[in-house]
Image 1 (cartoon, rainbow, N blue to C red):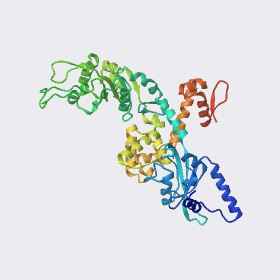
Image 2 (cartoon, one colour):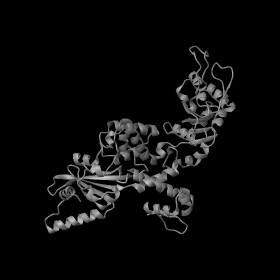
Image 3 (cartoon, rainbow, N blue to C red):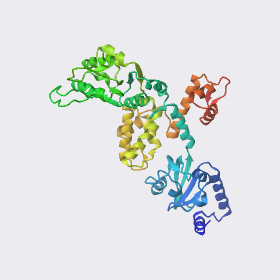
Image 4 (tube, rainbow, N blue to C red):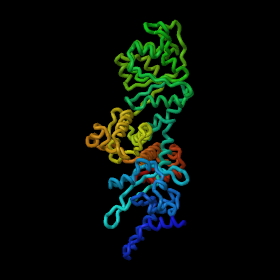
Length: 477
């Protein structure tokens, strides 16, 4: 060790108390810190490391004699170090931070997901002498989340909710065909995103994806938007204009809110679907169409058919394959992951460094009914990040209607208050559902989940699930 480093080490490490009892207490405390699995380090008021335990050495992959005396941002290289340092915030505000998820880059260049907690470090007289930070390696949890995601993810479309299992089981077969698809779901539930996923994973993936909201145009404009027009077709038509069918040639056309189109437009659209041809306004001959149609609606088309507002033959023509997309309130397991995704996106757009949401904030977000579904949640996170001034989105940053629901609503069945707990909940539900479907047969359940039986047993133990009967039935501890 160099003389300079030796001096730094000697001056940085706390001196044991003079009394025998104090010395024994200090030794005992140090022994405890050395035996725990969480990484621990302390810093002085200049943020230079004064102590690093064995687990911290292993996680960061650094020798403590190389770390002590250096700035903590040089050793503990976290995504929070620039602009959102948790230790700095704790020392400035005097308040601890608990279970904040982030990542570090260890000395091997590997990204490691961790959960950190911070506290103020005081001497015997109560004076602030620095700070302490503990961090837990979440690599196993991240791997677990990836395993769960892999079983319910196609392209960028993923979910952790059992209510989405039917859609994911059907999606690969649907994507590989050119059959017409009807997607049903509430406004903002992600119908267009699902349609794009079908297109991106099918044989037309190299062709264009074109979407049109049929409810946004009056009948006369919708006709020209869909089929285009020829020069001179009407006053002001000084050139040819291709419609959405022409723009989507060889690809996919999404007819969003198809339940809003007029009876006359329904007749024209039915002809296109039957004959695979259409006539632009002012044209004298038909144009062949090679387009896959995906229709979407938030309306109950059967009721519109019964009332005569929607043609029965058109309904049967578009209802070849139907997918019902559950609203967000029926797949609350997805809320923590969507929140995390939106925060990462808006950090890039806004050039911010928001690390996540607090426990109480996530609880409120999980309890809220989300009448506007995913679109409303996205807008809520964007608005909250505009007013967020700390490292975490707090309850006061939420819109009034969402924040007020924290007291108005009774707790809903998502107890997760962190990404880790949401992952555990999703995995527990997936395993229980697989075991129930396989009549308690652990081997078959493991196969259905895409896991090795040994991996399944390990997960059962970790989640507190026990299989203790010969026929494989299980119960919770």
